Length: 142
Length: 132
View: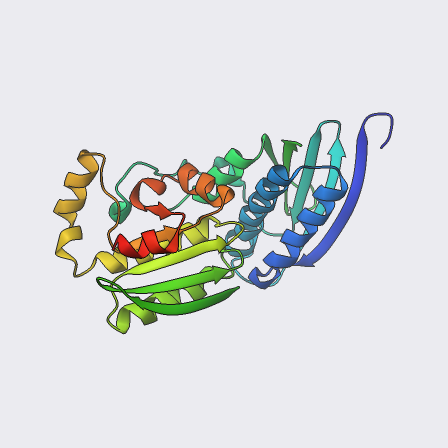
């Protein structure tokens, strides 16, 4: 860890495909553990990253081939996971809130992934990358 | 992800689907397919054993919702009017789709997603089967 309390653990570059969600989950688990996160924190981050990666695969790349990069690190008390892709601009943080109160048989399920991402992390920050693509930074006190 | 299917003939036939692995956008289609196979075989009661499911993503929850609605079809006790009445009373839980041993993480996410109110969870297999 450097004097600013920052520590980089790992990076992963992988094809943005649903079949790679398990590899992505293992990356988060291994690196979060190496960075000193507790089990509950790790579980939350695994799921939050699954939701984010799924959004990239299905809504960013529309299920066509594209790269996804992940970085894991620590900034003081916060675990930080960054996802970067080369898909058309897509800001998941502007997704409308999900419907959580309508009876299940009438309910539309849109927006639930982002809702869970927000609930399972302490912060979500999006930016469009200057050369194209998207960057999503999620942080959690771990 | 693996799904083990077994049938229990208690008061009514119940299909028990033991799911091993995470339920997410990659794997939830398997659960959907197995549930539909069970439904098409004539069984109308489904118990999902979630003891080995580390998490259910929003896509897994979407699949639970679809199974919930599938099992309601053709069940007069769970038609829209009965559902609405039960919800107004704060009492509706599916009589045909139930959960066994969801982990703490899964329970938390079902709550965050607002679906736990529709699905009863049990900690013991015998109690779950007897409840159908």
